[in-house]
Amino acid sequence: MTLVSVRVPLVVAVLLAGWCGVARAGDGRTDKERQLIVQLRTAAEGEKAIACKQLAIHGSADAVPDVAKLLGDERLSSWARIALEAIPDPACDAALREAAGRLQGRLLVGVINSLGVRRDAGAVGMLAGRLADPDPAVASAAAIALGQVGDVAALAALRPTLAATQPAVRDAVAEACVVAAERMRSAGRGSDAAALCDLVCKAEVSAQRIGEATRGAILARGAAGVPRLIELLRSPDRRMFGFGLSVARELQAPEVDAALIAEIAAAPARAALFVEALADRGGATARKALAEVAARADAERTSRLAAVRALGRIGDDASLPTLLALASDADRDLAAAARTAIADLPPSAGVDDAVRGRLASASPAALPVLLEIVSRRRISAALPEVLGVVKNADKGVQAAAVAALGEIVDLDRLGILVDRSVGGDDAAGGLAALRTACVRMPDRDACVQKLEGALGTAAPATRLALLDIVGEVGGKRALAAVAAAARTADQEPIQDAGTRLLGKWATADAAPVLLDLVKTIPEGKYRDRALKGYLRVARQLAADEAQRIEMCRTALAAARNDADRGIIAEAIKGMPNAAAVQKAVESQP
Image (cartoon, rainbow, N blue to C red; front, side):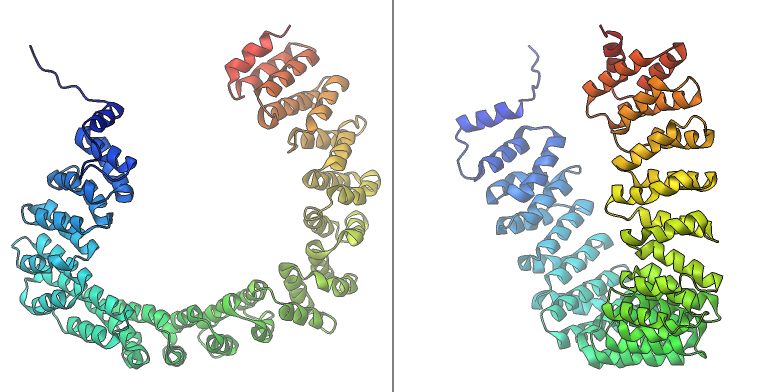
């Protein structure tokens, strides 16, 4: 008789384990852990991997022996280490150390990495011995792990190997020292951290490691590290210069601001980069310096642009005079950047009041700029001032004022834009502003009411534009207005616009209106459009399949010819669960 291995289902396995005394030591301390341990012992490979992952959350020392058995498995070792790195019990450290004594190659590297993650001080002796391992990957992993442990014994093992170890491993030792120094600095041991980083800087290691160590040494010394920072900021080496910019953003010392400000003036080619670093530091000193750079006509142009853009990000009320002066600059890029910066300044009554206060006395040349800022910042308090210049003799000022009204006008004075759109000199500008204003009105029906008079009296082209605005506003009153347009058989362009807008209406309440059109208007493209619009509502906006089926049946009942029925059949094909809908419609009594 041939024995055939049979996979025991997990539930059965758990029950069997229970019969055998599942609560014995090493079998789990909770129901969840017990289940996962059984899964490790009995399940297939993929399920074992999932169990390891879950044991990282639910595991205890009981699970460690079963998990540790997988450390030598090429396919499951990494999954086992996920659990052993996370379970808060020293049994994990012991298991990893034991595995490190018997594994080789990639598996050994993984175990050493896990010891580093756990910062196992008990592994320092073994890790120190591995620094001389003939496999560079193993030696490098041991070095990094020692750096993560970072205690006195670990550092005592690392320091000599900066010079003595093989070149392939030396960079890993340097990285380990930098990691350990970072921990020292975080723990308040700045002088120790600086000394360790200095040791790395003197070693024969890569430029990347020297840069990292230099950064660590500067940060560890605080303000006393600024002279060394300045050396980096003046370095011709791009990598070291990059480290300098990074450290300048990190080091919290006022002396850094002064250093960056000095470099902006001393190194025009790099000034924009210094400006950006200063802006990232923020603060009153940075804001004042950036405003000065932006205002200096003799400063390098890219640095001025960078300063203006930065003020939009970190500026305040005090930045406004400089930016307003630049907003009308002959340099178009600088002027545009200044206007954008003013628009981007954080919300502030001081900024808005200052802009508003300048409107009354501004020159015709300055007014469009101020009105653009009113528009972009949506300074609604400036409505009286904007209304005061909307009839300015200068056409450019008028256009800017109308555009600003689109952003700030209220419902009570919406008629100003309606009149401008219907009979003003700049109807196109008025319509654009009216559209902007209408779509932001909170009371949609009241907004449409303001437009209804013009809908009946405006010239055909304007009426079409107003209908589009009504369609964008939406709501019950808008739906009624558009429906009326769709029935205007004696004015084809209006009927065309009405049926087009109804066909793409965004709410399901358009369905009865569209169905009524299907039943009442003559055959032709507008009726076809209404039928397709009704079916689009069924397809996209119906509450559920039952409503969708009912709407299709209703459409079929309203069909007048085979063309209608073809439209309905084609629409059903695009509906969710089309076959079921088609069958239900066909079974209509």
